Image (cartoon, rainbow, N blue to C red; front, side, top):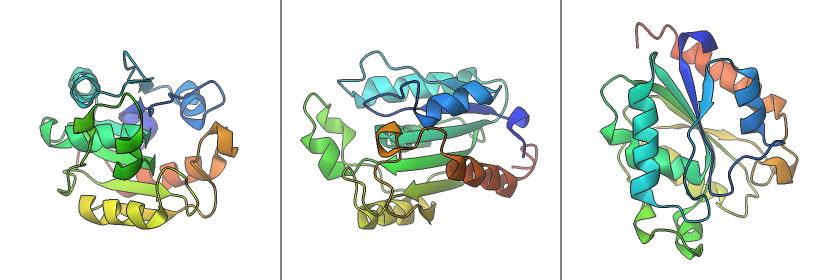
Length: 189
């Protein structure tokens, strides 16, 4: 599968993705990528955030690949069962925020947790760091197992954002390319 075969939806987390964040850089480089904007990044609301994502998926003219980071991962798993069949052909999930961390954040809708435990209805890859303050590697492994995601060990790299030095994140871009290749032809998915 190639990037021009799909629409790529960028789903940032609670802090968004500033100009140096890898999600923003990917969005700029990938012609079929667009960001799912949220009204209030400081107050994640499960209902509003998932509605925005579901609307973006429904508006897509091509099969969709979701690229989510941090609380954006939680948004994807909450919305996944509600996507129309075969609209989403894959999800690239990066540095999820653990349920414990989300529950402890001020101004977050309490219904954001717990996360659904059902397998996702599309292929997914979850990239996790071994020293992410927002989610232990063990918690990320449990999420991947529940969701049927392939777990990728990113090593000791923090929260995989611009603060941890992941501006362009070339390793992530290579992994994303590999993921797309594994998905194959979107007409066959």
